[in-house]
Length: 291
Image 1 (cartoon, rainbow, N blue to C red):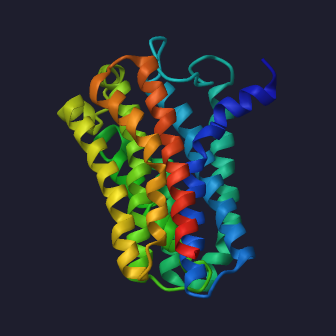
Image 2: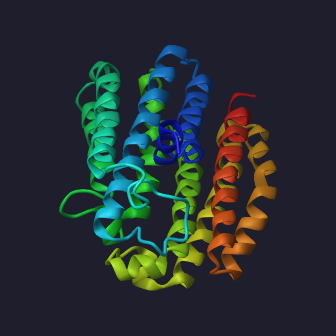
């Protein structure tokens, strides 16, 4: 396998929509306030993608190190567990991506003051602490909360702020479906991996309280996401945010699979469908906001 192929497997490009969508939605919110700044939006996008790449690489390294990724893994190939890359190389690449995110993000945060600097530092810390460090968040039932916060309100409101707009009710409300659908992606992953996570001591919400709880939370995340456009339509005094409801066809097969299946390949398909839902919903929501 070529180094490029191994690198792509490690970076997980199909997952990167989760970091793109909050920036797109946040930029749309900024545009509604007349504060669109393409250069700052582009910088925010680069930082967000680098943060996720770093987190993905550290997750690859950390889950292998802790035994969560083993020979019986049901999900896509992980390069450390499969022996395709040395653990030290994966760890170094992850930390390098986070360092680059910090370098690119520092001027943006500096221009906004101490709260933005703190938010940026917390985002980098969360990317590291998700599966690395002495108390990895994902291993203590905090993965879903972390993903909701940092792929939802933090990312959306951060994008709004760096373009000079404020944390309005519209901005807060727009961040909720983005975070909810990013959390839904993680919930599919955790329902699929519940057995192997339990054996590795990875105490996710699904491991602690069962697959039924994971499925209910998934349904709740989708319900929150699809309720938000109605609230946004009221705040914007326009039906345009309801355009996001056109993403519903992506939700139906994923929700049906989550409700009925524990089969690895079927849940992998639900995972991909939920990622597509997140991307389609986010793009449609952004389009509705700026319409």
